[in-house]
Length: 204
Image (cartoon, rainbow, N blue to C red; front, top):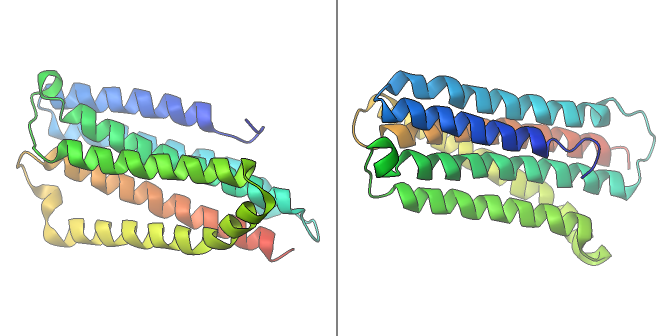
């Protein structure tokens, strides 16, 4: 773990905020799911900004390649944590014996988010541990992959807002809150990742 790796903080945020969301859902307190979700997003953004600000302020004329790779490694793990939060929250909220909520698609979306988390963590691992050729390829792919995630998150957010689903009280109401805050987290983390990558590579 690098000195700027915020993984322990993000893990603590995932576990604590999901627990609070489940507690609120089990008691039928719809509005009380929002504060812990906001807390997770705020924590994730703060953690990523703290780990990236040194790169934004760097005055090095040409940072070594491993600095770029380390930044991608950290930021891919942060995106993975956002997806992991979404997966765990979705699954826990629709664990019917625990919360009383039932929605047949909850486990499907939880699995999709878990897959995205696994892919993000694997990308991070390969950027750090793979051979030179693979790492160079992943660095080239970083920008389009990150833009793609940001665009998909923004599109999902726009759909939620325009469709009025956030006001729904159907069984999927809790899922819509997870979608909303997941999209917000991914959009901001993707933007930070792109800013850092541009800052470091423009110096190279």
